[in-house]
Length: 394
Image 1 (spheres, rainbow, N blue to C red):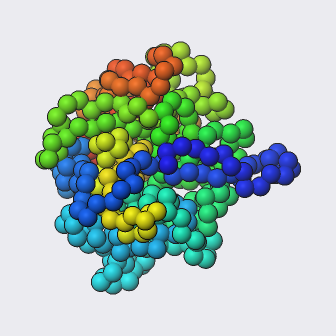
Image 2 (image 1 turned 90 degrees about the vertical axis):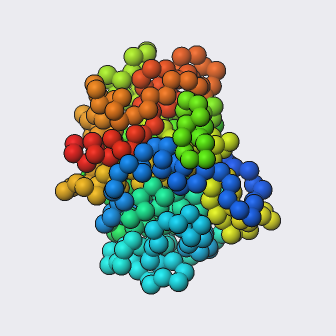
Image 3 (image 1 turned 180 degrees about the horizontal axis):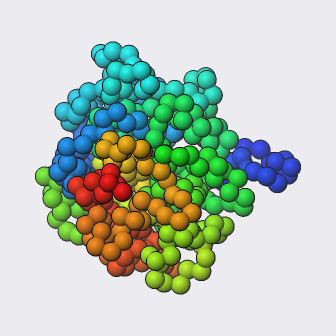
C-alpha cells in the first residue's frame, strides 16, 4: 500500500489513443497487526490539534461522497463501532438505527451504493481504505451525510464512473484516496471534475516526490502529508513537519494554473504543481480506525497514516464551510481557487499552518519544505477555526 501500479486492464492500441484503462491503488500506510483497543490518535486529539473544536459547525445538511473500489462488507458496522468508541454523533443507516438515504433522510445518513448496480467483490486493502475514509470524514464533519460509492473494481473506467454517480446523490464534496502515476492523455479524465458547486479532494500519494493522478488534475484539491506530534490532549509537542513520503511535485503534462503563479517563487516553468494543502499523514503519528474485515488474518483496531487520511478530513472541512454558504464551493477555475485565495496576504498566517521543515526526496529545492508554498506540504495544514469562516464568506 502507498505505491502506485500502472497495470493496464486492457491493452489494445486503439484504446490507448484516446484513454487508458488502468488500475488505481489506495494510498494509506499502517502496521498490519491489529489490536484489541484503539491505537493512534483519536478524534478528540485531531480535532483539537487543527481547531475543529473551536467552531460549532458540524456539516449539517451537507453530503460527502467517498469514492472507493470494491466492497467493504462491514463498512456500516465498523463506522458504528468507531462512533461508539469515541462518543461521536450517531448516524442513520447504521446497525440499530433507522434506514435512510442521503437524499430523503433522516439525517445525518450513511448510505452505501454500488456504482455499477451490483455488489463488488471484497478486496482487503480497499476495505481498509474505505474504513479509514468514512470514519475520519465523520470525525471531521459529524453532522454531514456520507455516501460510500463502491466501484466494481479499481480500474480507472469503473472508478471514474463512480465519480459520476456522486452527482445523483447531491454530494458537493467528493473524496478520493487513491491514485496512480501520471500518464499521457490523462486530461481525458479531467471532465469528471468540471462540476459546478462541487469540490473534489484527492490524496497526493505516499511515495515521496512526484505527481500522481487524479491529485494533479485540474479542479482537484490535492492533499499532501505531514508529521504531527501530539500529546494525549491534542497539543503539539514539537513543530508539525513535512512527511518524508508525502506525494508532490510538478506535472509532466498539465500546465500551471493562473492562481498558482504568485505562490511559486522558485523556477517551475509552466507546469502544474501539487499538493495544494496538507494534513497529518505519517503512520507513526497515525489515526485510529476500526476494521472487522479479515485483513490477511487480522481484524480490529489499526493505526493508519498516508495522505489518504488527510483527503477525507479536508473533505469534511469543505462540508463545514458549505454549511454556512448559500451556494456550495466550487473547485478550481482557470483564474482563481478558494484554497489559494485563503492564502493571499494576511490571510495566509490566519488560515494555514505554514510547514517549514521536512522533505520528500533528494531532488534539491523542490523536495524541501520552505516558507510559503512547497511541493511537500503545499500551502500548509489547516487552521480550521479560521479557514472554515473564510471559505464560508468568500
